Structure formats: structure tokens, C-alpha cells
Image 1 (tube, rainbow, N blue to C red):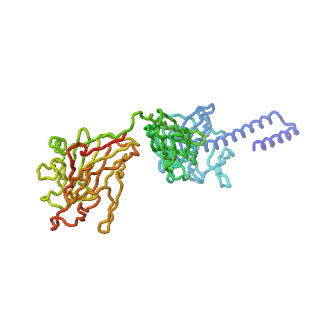
Image 2 (cartoon, helix red, strand yellow):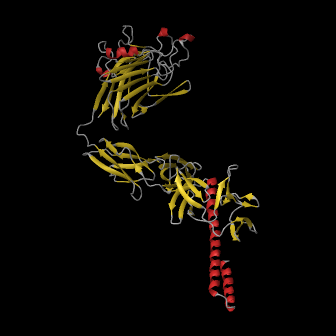
Image 3 (cartoon, rainbow, N blue to C red):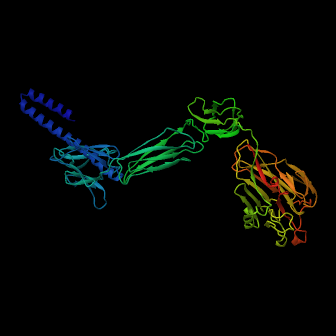
Length: 611
């Protein structure tokens, strides 16, 4: 427009020159008109800028977009908004001319445009600052009249009269008590909260393994006492926020046991702002790891087989085992057996190393084997219980009676403990015939005086002999004791020994059939009056020797223990118990007595160890 008017003025000057007019006076008129046009253009531009700036501020109040920082500039101020946008404001203090403004209507609480402090009217209506209708204005000034046309409109509308200049709308910006107060030329103010700009950053690994937990660090810029951080996990993922302060902390992220794609949304918020970051990881290949808890293996000279659990996330290889150590995998979960040959020479050692294919993860087992003993192995009697003698029975007699009627022990400071346990179904006998009674007979009418006796024996009852001494893997042991029983005692028994923590048969298993049923046992007890049996070469009725085979321990055992358990209700006379005394029968579960057939110590209960 200015260029067009200037061209018209230049043409007029030429025309005037042709008529001999005053060129200097005409030029002055042209300059004056040009200045007036420039002033009008500046005024229109200022109105446009002020309209946009004030609209952003007022709309920000509605949308909770506030000011986070104020920077002074040569022209005025730069306002950094919490949404990251920078708003440049021109300082109109000391300016002259008409000024655009805004004022909150006390009736409806909305902001409306003003011009020189008066509401700006379009067709008699106040124009709201925050409106979807009145946007992108186009201003023009003609003959000191201000016209406006908004987006979508075709015609300009007269909204008021203005002078030849327009002053910037804002005269001052200052921070007052946590707010930014923006003062307009007409004295109106816009108060915007000043809130630090909120920013969130999260760092951590880009890959994870299924089922693994990884820690991600986070930090919050612009935090205050109201700042909170939450993590929202998708699907079967889990996320736990550990805040160390309002501005920093960590997030423990756990992937599903079976991998599935997912993400963690992390939100940081304060009183008015919310920012978000997303944690996304892909499934990664785990770093190789391997460990061995039992990494020192001490082996006796006799050798043996030992299990070594290996914890690894790959199929381990191994090396370093000499010819006298055989290593083999025995389970799919990397459980390896070490079979160490007997040592006929000096003490020896080796290091067996487990590793992955490239050797980046390793774990080792130190194997040390004792030298062959120069002392010849032989049998040692490690426990002996001296029953029978009236002068020697006191060490077990009190404990035996105190534990009546169902459980009895015979402890010895030098031998160990003998126990009788009524764990089986209790006898159907009555108190009158001494059912379930433990005693030490003293009457001369008893079968054996001073020997421990149990009444009411039944299937599942047991004698246990436990030594004070233990055994190492590869060592051998055996037990010997003598038993006498009544006609109605249990006739079939199973002898076992404790190998590490496992009970195993201590003698050859046998099978006998009664009434169509098979009974598996290792030893049989006969009625004391039924037959005469040979005991250590002597003919004595009723004394049945119970001796184990020589047993070999495959695992270290804390205490050498043998157990003899009744396996059926078939009596010593071969009759299956069916009726109790109360039912008119002949009584059930007769007595059984731990005896010594002769006074010689060879016949006392005893445990032997070969070493």
C-alpha cells in the first residue's frame, strides 16, 4: 500500500513540475504522507503482535500453560512458557498512542479485548480473548478508524477510532510472590503463575533378558515439593519407582518370565504440569555366567563319586581333569559327577575348570585327594552296649523306663544310643497282658534278666542302634546283636543302614509267602521255645543273631546307624494276627527282647567300622 501511494505521489510531483510548481513544497508533502503511512503500518503491526501475545497468555491460563522464566531484552522481555515456547514482549512504557488491552469480566470470569481501556466491540458484542471464532485478526486503519477482520470473514468491521500511532500493550513485567504480573498500558493486569519448567530424563539398558530385573535411573528438572514420578507397566511387565529425592531416583523394571514386547510409561508431574518418557527395551542375549558353590572337593584315598552342582546359563565345557578324575554330566541342570580313583601314592590335587565356548566365563573346582594310608585297613569295634549285667544296666535303665510306654532309649556315653520305637499300629493287647510296655525284667522267672524288653510289638515297630561315630564315603561297617521273642512277636524284620541321609538295605532281601501274600524281609525271628538254633557255635534255644552284611557308604554319614523294622503282622509261629484279647483271641504283639546269649562281650550289641 505504501509503495503504491508513494508512486502516486511521485507521479503528482512530476505533473506539478510540468506546471512549474514548487518542487520543494511538494516533496515535503510527499515525505509527510510517507511518514503517516509508515506510522499506520507500524500501528497495524503492533496491534497484530499485541493481539497474538495477549491471546497466548490468556489462553495459557485456560490451558494451564504458565511462565517458567523471564529474561530481560533490549526491546522488553522474553517469557519462557512451561510448554517450551518463548514469547517476546515489547516494552511499551513511556509510549504514546492507542493501546490494545484485555480485561477479565467479573460477571463471567472471561477475558475480553479492550482498546484504550474500553471493551472492543464487534457489532455491539465484546470480543473474547480466548475464542475459536475470533482468531488470526487482520487490522486496518483508515481515516483514524480501526477495522478488523477475523479468519473466515470477508469484510472488515469498524471497531473504534484511533490516532496515528499505537503504543505497545505491555508496560511492565515483574515477578511478584511466585506469579508474573503483566501490566498493560490502560492499567489492566494479567497474572500468570511462575512455575519451573518440568523436564524428565530416563537412562538404562536397551536390552533385557526374559524374567530379568534391570534398574533405570531418572532425573527431573524443575522439580519441587509437589513433584511425583509414576511408572505404568504394560502387559506382564513390572515397574517399581524408588525415589531418592524430588528430582532423582530409579525404576526397577522386571521383564516377563516368557518374553513379550512391552513398554513402561514414566510420568513426572507437579501441581500443574505432566511430562512423559517411555522405556522400551528389546530382548537381549544374556551375558554368560557360571558359578560353583562347592568348589573345593576333599577326597579320601579310597576315592569315590561326588556330585558337583554347576550354576550356568550355558552348556558348560570342562578341562583340567587328569586321568584319575572322571567328570560326567548326570543331569540336564548341569549337575556333574566327579569319580575319583583310589590313590595308591602320595597326596595329589587338580583343578577342573568349567567354561563357555570362548572362555569368557569360568568357574573351577579344586580337587584334593589324600595319600594312601601306610596303616593296613582293619575292623574296629566303635560301639558296644553292655546289657545283661545287673551292675551295668543302670546307664540305660532309667531312661528306658522314663520313656515308657511307647518309646525308649538306652544312651551310652561311650557307644551311642539304642532306641525302640512303637511307631507301628499299636497292639490290640490289653494293659493286663502288658501291651505297649517297655521294661527291664528283674524277676528270675523272666526269659532274660536285666535285658531291655518291649511288649506289644507290631508292624512298623523298630529297634535302632546309633553309634557316636560317623563314616566317610567309601568306608564299610557292620552290626551284630541278638534278639529273643515270644510266640506272638513279629516274626519278619528288615534291617537297614543310613547312607548319608538315605536308608538302604543292610542285608540280602528275602521273600516268603503266607496266605497268598509275599513278604520281603532280611531277618526272621523264631519263638524262643520253638526251635534250637546255633549261636556262635553253641546250641541255645531262642537266641537269634541279627547280623548285617558288610555295608559300604557312598556318602559321608554323621553317625553310623542301623535299624531293624517289623515288616508284617505274621508272628514268630507263622500265624497272622487277627484277633485281640478283647475279642476273645489269644493276645497280639507279644514281647521282644534285646539279649546277650552269653556273658562274653562278643554277644553284646555292637557296631564295627572298617578303616
